[in-house]
Image 1 (cartoon, protein in one colour):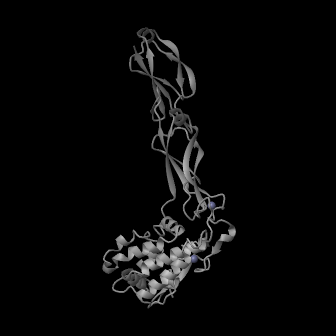
Image 2 (image 1 turned 60 degrees about the vertical axis):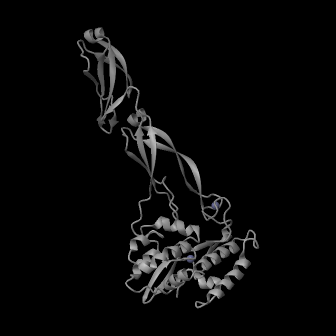
Image 3 (image 1 turned 120 degrees about the vertical axis):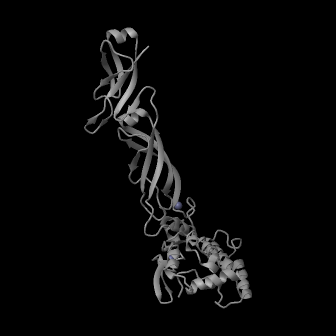
Length: 352
Ligand SMILES: [Zn+2]
Ligand SMILES: [Zn+2]
């Protein structure tokens, strides 16, 4: 009862106690039969050919075969906790990386190779595993993009554009990855469930189907545009609303514009990490804006009026007599406006 694992014996059409020679014979016969040169353009044959090779890599190697047999029979005794193994099957600890953490497995050190060849068979499976690494505690599906914005946009708010390269659902196959809808077939190994029941001794557990990588479907002929990935990498331009008063290092959350995780149909959120470019004359002090105001000694002594630039546009600023170098003149409410709070514009007098 091991329909959870790819049955390499079945793939090569040999019995479980087949000799090395019998395996080799069968492999050669099948490899010849399904060789891509003999079946040009036949995706089914190609997949079969790959499967045959994969099976031979394991069964044709005595060490790997021994480990594979143990795996099939769930015969891990000697202190091995089967539940850990189940986690690996589900990709809970990451496809192969998880082995490092198992420590103390001694003779089982070579298992990684088997898993690699099993997992490596089909791309969607790998993708799937990557997406679900971490088991129950899935990584938050957020993507961070960096964006430099002009000072005035940060202070006043506004719209800006951001180019992001990202995965889009392939429009030629609507994301199925198949050449035609008929090329998508229900996985026979799991009946489309994506999971199979697996018994190990007295344990019966569900684990991800090896036949389809948990997708429940298999693809016969691939979509030419996306090569069965169902997605295509594209550069898109997003229009981003910048809230006024944003400062360097702060992030803007754009819902539903983030990464499209494998196996998901909806995007996660995109976080835009902002850095604010400096302004030739304005400096930010909290919600206040500061800039220098150059006066001649006479103007500072006698007082005058000047047209000065603020976030709100030009204003008339009255400079009182006897203004001192370095002192500040405050234009109320001309700084950054956030809700009901209004910053000021501070003019630092520079006598030249
Ligand atoms: Zn399946
Ligand atoms: Zn496609």
